[in-house]
Image 1 (cartoon, rainbow, N blue to C red):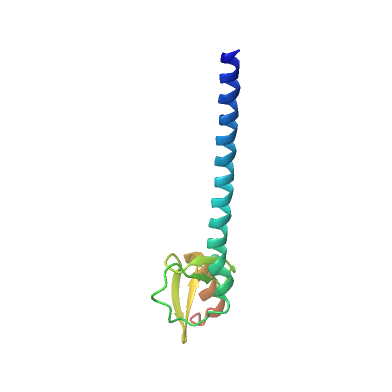
Image 2: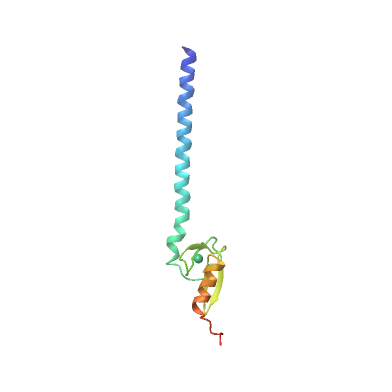
Length: 105
Ligand SMILES: [Zn+2]
């Protein structure tokens, strides 16, 4: 009888621990999601480029519309503004789209 009670208690604690772990993972996942989506919302409003001090700023690729980390993006100066691309392919697509084979003659 005592053995059975011990097993039941063990199973009960196992359930409690696994449930709390699941709850913690959910809470952490929710917090991480909030942290990741917060700078993306402020991106459109804060279009000024002088934010060298802040870390991890998201920039928008004008070709595919993807949001990329500024440190991972491929920058290109076009006229007065600095553009950011997610990949070299997107940058080439942008430059190929603007300069339409002027040199061919
Ligand atoms: Zn892209």
